[in-house]
Every structure is written in C-alpha cells, then in structure tokens.
Image 1 (cartoon, rainbow, N blue to C red):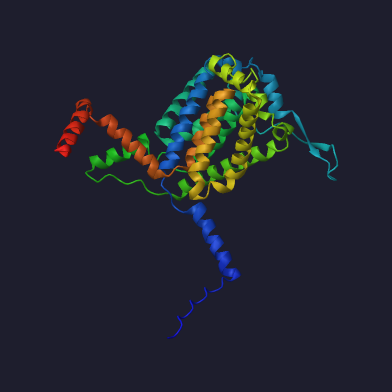
Image 2 (cartoon, rainbow, N blue to C red):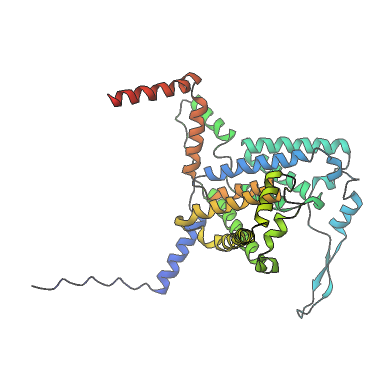
Length: 378
C-alpha cells in the first residue's frame, strides 16, 4: 500500500508580489466604490447638531459675533492680521529665533459684516442653509454654506471654542468631499419623484468612490483622535496614580453634584474604599485601553462592533458626568461612520413601515397574533 502523496508546498511570495498586493489593498481601502448611505446618515446627525448649535447663538448673538462682543472688533482684527508668530531656533535649542509671520489664517463672515441688521440676516441665512443641508436639499451648495457658516462662528467667537466645534469642522469638511445627499435626503426623494413622472423605475443608489474616500478620511481621522487622546493621557500623572476620574466625578463645575441620585452614588462609592478604587481604576483602564487600541482593533470585523459600542459607552459617561452632551453626541455621529449601510437601510425601512402602517392595522395586530396562536394550539 503506497503512502498518500504529501500536499504541495504553497509557492513562495516574492517581494514584488507582496508589494503589489499591499498596493492593491491600499487602493481598495481608499478608492473602491461604496454605498453612500452611511455618509448620508453622518450628514443627518451632523446637520442636526450644527443647526442646534448655531440656533443657540441666537440668544446673545451680538455678544458672540457683534462688533462690541466678548472679543470686540479691534481685538479680532489684531488676532487675524497683526498678532506675531515666532519660529523656533534653527539649532533646536529652547526659545525662539525670529518672527515668522503675523496674523492667523482665519475666516468668518462676521469679520466683514459689522452692522447688527446684516448680522441678523447672515445668521438667519446660515440657519436656513443648515436646515436644508440636514434635510438633504441641494446638498452640494447648502453643505458648503453650512461648513463656512459654522466656521464663521468658530473663528469669530473663538473664546467659546471647545471640542464640539473642532469635531464639527472636521466632519463638515469631509462631508463636502463625498455625495452626502445621495441617500436619506430630499435630493434623493426628488430624483425618485422625477423618475416616476417619466414612467421609469426607481433609480438605485449608486456606489461612489468619493463616498468611500470621504468615509475613510473620517474613520482614519477619528482613529487618530482617539490615539492622540489615549497617548496624551499617559503623560499625565493623574492617569498613572489612578486619580484622573476623581478630578471629574467630584468637580462641581462638571459633575451634576446637585442631582440627588448622582450625589448618593458618589457618597456610596466614597464610603466604600475598595469599590471606589475598583470603579475609578477600572474606568481609567477602560478609557486608556479603548482609546489606544481603537486604531487597530476597529478594522477587524470581529472587534468592530465591540469597539464602537465601548466608545459610545464612554461618551455616554462623558455626557452624564461632565455635562458635555453635544460633544458626546457629535462623537457618536462620527462613530456611525463605521456602521454598515445595510444596517442603516434596515433601520430606515423599519421606521418607514411603522409610520406608513394605518393605525387600525397596528391595533389589529394583537388580535391577529391571538388568532394565530389559537389555530396553532388546535
């Protein structure tokens, strides 16, 4: 009896083939066509938050962008055109060598519009454009106006800028690259309506290279944000000593100490030292592990949902404990860039079916289920 033949060894991969394979993977990652539904979902969330933020500027509008606001016109012009910037010494020693340039590359319509009447007109126009962008009408034009409008508040009322404004500017920029109005939008509804009028079938949502490119830019940027946040925390002694969460949870400027259930929880933790140490130490390890490992684990389909859900849980904690609700919601919108388009379409279809269903049909459902159970029991 002859022994079975040994399987042939796989051919060796040459360095040239390895490089070509890596280049093909790189090309597929950035430039393969993708369903724009996910990008459109990001547009919905971003537009709604931007509209809310700009709407809040309406109360005290002139304090933010008026000529006699918190940063008055003369000071803002000095920041834009006169404030000096100095270059580092050429030999890398401590200190500065000489003045490099003056001013900053800032843009704001409110550097040029100083009349109160026209400030109100510009503010109203930006609000309208943002609402249209959120609804997905003339998205290419209204998206550009929304981005420039949001920038006008950020770079004029720069004393109020914090993390939310940075994340909004990042996301709005990437939304201008891809077709964010190709789905879940009035543009899409009008396209289907025109096709019905012509007697043509409903046009499908076309995969787009620019949609994939915009999503990848947003995803990679979000990964770098988490990595920078996690590694910068390692430079702080509070994160090594285990007291970082103490500074947040017990800070009345952030924490809701006047909320009785929260105060009772903190008091309970403080009277049980080992529970407090376990809670704060676990929170620190969770935060550092998530932010540092997000950049390489989120690309593995086995860990993607785990990492996205853990990040959403972290931002929920930030919203509840620190009161940074809009910032946390914006980070969750950016996290939604990892959602598959199939999941989003199922969500939208489920909502459409629920709202389109007649009330009588909804009321009859329990009776139908009971009748079905009766038939099965017989």
